[in-house]
Amino acid sequence: MLSRVADSLYWIHRYLERAENISRFLEVSGAMALDCPPGSAEPWLPLVEASGDRHRFDLAYPAGSPREVIRFLLYDLDNPNSIVRCISSARENARQIRDVITTEMWEQINDLHWSLQVGEPIWQEPLQEQLGTIRRGCQIFYGITEASLSRDLSWLFSQLGRLIERADKTSRILDVKYFLLLPSPEAVGGVLDELQWITLLRTAGAYQMYRQKMQQAINPISVASFLLLDPIFPRSVRFCLQGINATLEQIQQQPVQGPPDDLDCLSGQLLARWSYVRIDALINAGLHEAIDQLQQDLNRLHTLIQARYFTTTDLRPNVANPECVLTSFTA
Image 1 (cartoon, rainbow, N blue to C red):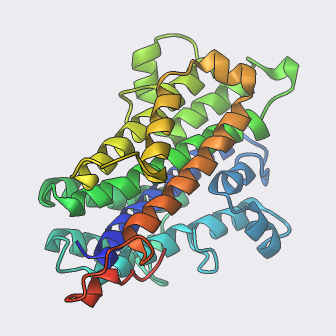
Image 2 (cartoon, rainbow, N blue to C red; image 1 turned 60 degrees about the vertical axis):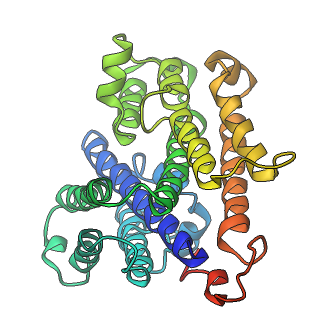
């Protein structure tokens, strides 16, 4: 597979997973805002923290009002991580590899992109309807990919991008609750505290699965354990790391001769670390610090994947086909 094709497939699914996650964040916070005083930024500003763009947001919108948070995360074209920009970037990558993806995949991502342009009917709808439409559009793309794309390298690089993005966003939204929204000691276990944990689970699409598995009152330790360490919930960090490790092994195809390189080491160590740790040990050592380290490790994992598969540094150029060392539109 060409380097530029693998790069585009990886980023198409990272961008769409990012857009879907941000739409979830906004959708649940919009519902939570109904229980807060009018104009309160309490359910909104943590979303900017979770997206990792607080510095950019503060420069662009010093007032930090709820309306500005929504604009920044939903359709601000100056924010490269806004939903509209992410879908536009995914569509541009898909346009460049139309001969690799299926026609149905292209049509779906193209339709989604054009439906979000200025003046389209979606912007006349209430916010919750807008976000629901976007989220369903991303999920339809996933379903089409699942049903129509062969399980070859195209599929593997697509899954790799999606899983890395999902692990990052799940860890970020949990970190926001533990570190930024930590209530005062007297508020722990109160109505607002429980409401925030329910909101967190809904944001991660985990509320029903959590209820089915835990069958107990919501408490911080069990929520953190479910989102970080559950081996079968598809949005948990551990499940994503299992998928990343298995996908990298399949992409490798041939057994590595000699000692594993940095990418293989980091992938294996991450999976082992988050498969054989207990939640009480994480909390006692500092959950924020553990999640912060996880995000750094995921960034490093991305850098190593890019160096091995997407850039000229670690590729073995085929002189007969110079195109094999080209990279894609964006990274």
